[in-house]
Every structure is written in structure tokens, then in C-alpha cells.
Amino acid sequence: MKRLAYLLPVLILLVAFAPGTGVFTNLTITGDHSFNTPYAEMYDNTGIVTSITPNDVYYTITGFTTGLNNEVTVDDSIFTITKAGVYRVSMNQAFISSNNSMVCHVSVFVDDVESQVESERKMGTSSDVGSSSGGGLLSLAVGEVVKLKAKANSGTTITFQHINFVINKIN
Image 1 (cartoon, rainbow, N blue to C red):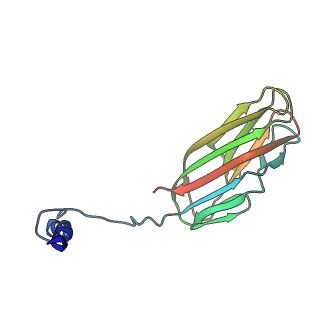
Image 2 (tube, one colour):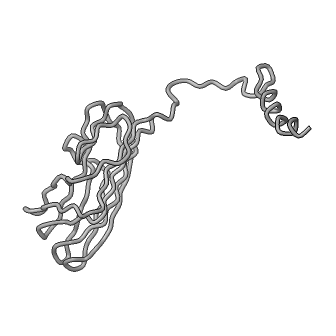
């Protein structure tokens, strides 16, 4: 009798989802709805130092560690897209300023063109620690290169104490 009690939920499911029972008979799935979609991550927690001289010019942030990735080519500081589509992009960074009243700006670039995904933070004094984050959606084609770049209005370096850059295909 105990065995029948364990099997009862299984039998109910089999009957509920059996053909002709009316459950999910009109469900239609088209396209690739697998969970095997492209994604990738780059990060660093050791202190990437990015030179920003001359000021107000973007410089590629390099020295990342590759995190989890699937179907996106990752090489130190860039993601190369292998499947076209709409991607969610997010970035988070904590950094140290090298000058008083320094404005730090970090942006996502696609094929060396600045996108709308960006963040900015004004620092008070030299050696202040601040953070910023940004995110958005980008329509990307196969072969496009996505990277983070930084600039500041003063100072010589930005030290990224912690930085995380993630991209994942949503459509």
C-alpha cells in the first residue's frame, strides 16, 4: 500500500498530460527555446590599473579574468559575438581616483563605437573609492567586438579594485 501512495502523484501527472486530456493540447513552441544561449563574463578583483593620460580620451580596460562563458569568444578585454541577436549587457565597478574632483566615466563600446551603456562617478579627493554601474540592451551582429573603456577629466590612472562585465543573449 505504501508503494501505491508514492506512485499516485506520478500516475496523476501521467493522466493529466496524456494526449487527448485537454491539458496543453494547444501549446505550440517554435524557434530555439533551449537554455543554451550565448553568455560571457569578465571580472577582476585584484586591481586593474588603467592609464588615462591624456585626459578625456577613452582607454580600453585590460587585464580581466574570464568567468563563465558559452558561445561568446572572450579574449582578455573583449567579447566577440558568435550569434546575432539582442544582448543584455551589465557592468559594475569599484575604483580609486588618482586626483581631486576626478570624474570617472566607463562605457561599453561595440566595434570601437561608444554605445548608450555607460556610467559615471565624480570622486571627491585623491584616493577616494567609489563605484558605478550601468546596463542596457544591444543589438549585436556576428563578429562584433564588445569591450569596456574608461576615461577621466583629470589624473593619470584609474585603479579598478573590483570590476565585472557580463553579456547574455536574450533574443
